Structure formats: structure tokens, C-alpha cells
Image 1 (tube, rainbow, N blue to C red):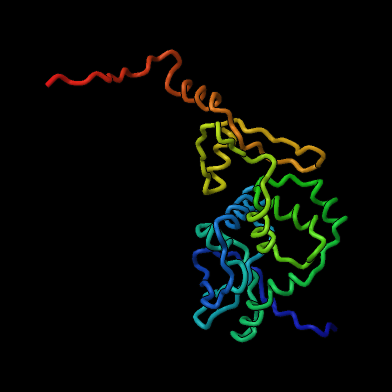
Image 2: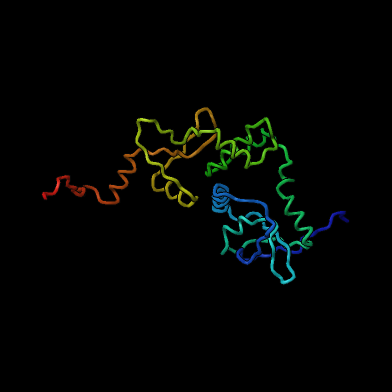
Length: 233
């Protein structure tokens, strides 16, 4: 007989918007993390259950999985229903992430794993790469690594405008917009010099965009004539 109690009552599939958000949830999820999660859900799908406990009125209150529930409110999602009290649920809520952060990193195994993956989301890709390379603090959280990467790292495949260039910056604020830009602008994957890391080329020559605009508007159309002559008074 096991000395540990099995507190899982059942695996239930519930529409995400019916789950009750936990007002004590202390995790905050910025747009970068949401985009990374949406990309993972798009590529792999739901591969892990949300965790909740049952309230007296029968509703399920979340302990873990708030971001996924918020990103997919209309989806039917897998939920592990626990037989725990509110106090036990609070303890689980407080310790899910901290216990995970206690793990140290075997950099050789992580590098081997990363070499087999194609991770398109650049924030997640950079965080994983930095995690594999960081020897000073193996217990650093992914968020801490992302903050460091944002402050210090300039990606080799990012646009590095020079002063004599005229340029326009296009910001994709969601993974869906970014994927559409990749498709429309025919962005290519590039391998960094002396590295197994593969990323997406993000610098696009103006002629490419102008050619696409010409194709959309119709090749050979004359541009509208704008008169600069002053009107007679």
C-alpha cells in the first residue's frame, strides 16, 4: 500500500470558460508568454491537464492552468479534479512553480534535446538557449533569463538598422499575426554561423515588400498624380 494519498478524483473535460479563476493566483502572464503558449498549443495541442478542485456548488476552481484557460475559453479542456480542501489548494497554488525551480540543469542533455527541436517563438527559443549556456545560476527562472536576454542580447538575425538606412518597424503582437507575416513575406529560416541554432530571418528588403504591394494593386498601374502647383488667387 502506498504511503501517499491519491488526491485525484477524476479527469474531467470542461469548457474552459466555465472554470472559476482563483483570486489568489499570483502568476502573471505577459504577451510574450501567452504567444509562446499559443504557439505550443497550435503545434502540439493540449498535452497536460489543468488542475482544479470542486466547490460546494459543483463548479471547478482552478489551482493550475489559468493562462491556458484564459487563452482558450471556448475549448473543452482536460481538468484533473482534486479531492482537496481550500487550504490544501492554496498550498498547491503557492508551490507548483517554486518546487519546479529547485531543479538543476544538465546542460549536455538540454543541449542535445534543443538540437532536435525547432522552436519558432523567439522569446522561448532564446530563453532555452540561454538556459543551456548559463553556468552561473542553473536555478534561474525562465522569466529571469528572458529579462536578462531582453536587456543584453541582440539576436544575430534581428534587424540591426544603420543610420544611413531608412526603415519601418512592423510589430507582430500575436503569434497569429507573426505567422501570417512569415507566410506573406516569405521569411526564411536561417542557421546562425558556427551554431546549430536555427531561427527566422527578420530583416526584409524594401523591394520585396514593394513587389508584393505592386502584385496586390496590379502591376503596371500608374500611380495617382499629385499636383504641387499653387492655386491662383
